Image 1 (spheres, rainbow, N blue to C red):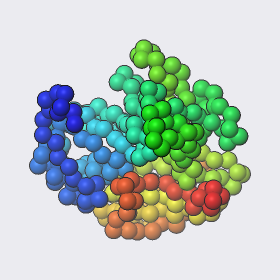
Image 2: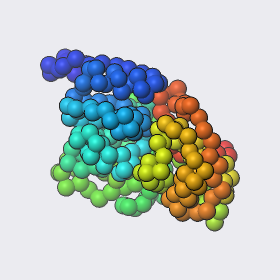
Image 3: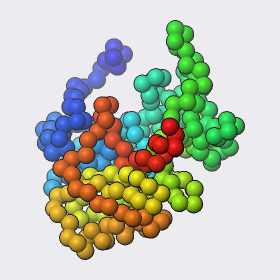
Image 4: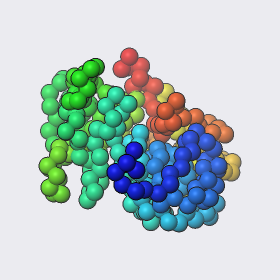
Amino acid sequence: PVSLFHQTGPSYFLNSSADVVAQLEWLQKIQPSYLMTHPSNLSALMKLQQAEGIELTGILEVRTVGESVSDELRNEVAEQLNAKMVDLYSSEEFGYLAIQCPEHDHYHIQSESVMVEVLREDGSSCEIGEFGKLVISSLRNYATPLIRYEIGDYGELAEPCSCGRGLPVLKRVHGRVRNMLLHPDGSTHWPNFGFRKFMQVADVRQFQVVQHALDEVELKLVLGDPLSFAAELAIKDILRKSLGYPFNVNITYHKALARNANGKFEDFVSLLALATKE
């Protein structure tokens, strides 16, 4: 639709459910200037690119949608692809909710079309620097309006932006409740995995952490080469230190880790959080 207002170049589409090897070969062939994909798919592409010593040149900007973005991934894009990374926060119910500021990594809420509230569990409003559940109201859907709709995501409010746009700011958008790690003492937080340290030990192509109990997690791995016993111990130790608790870690091996129907992938899922929520 942009071509109605401005002349653009050709665009290409490949389903993200395609094998990551096929995706990388396809990107080498078309040599895009702009790439849009899910953050987890981007991470898998970059890991394979690095492992195979393949160069992707000419990418000016990477746009990500559909999943939470880590600071680690932003750094990898800058270092490995020498490209700018821009994240878009949207939903099927509302369309675009917040767009990354051109001058910063935080997000401007699209207040012309939606109202976004960040609320505590008791329904009170969060302060700046505090994360809470995102509750959305549509300002333009007159046929089937959604008012104070709890979308299931969590976000963190930020100070007004220095860019001068005047729109409310989200510092970051976290995952859903199932993406929160539960500790035995009852505390919760968004987990860090130490993935870069994983890569120093083994050729990890893809991973997912699943919390089955308060003291037990499963680490699902897709590998280039099998792990030695010593490497298994090292990776378990890295994960425990990164998660901040001596969890019982069970490693399972897979040929691939499936995405959901929307092409999204979650690197962490708490089955315990899902059971509690339900």
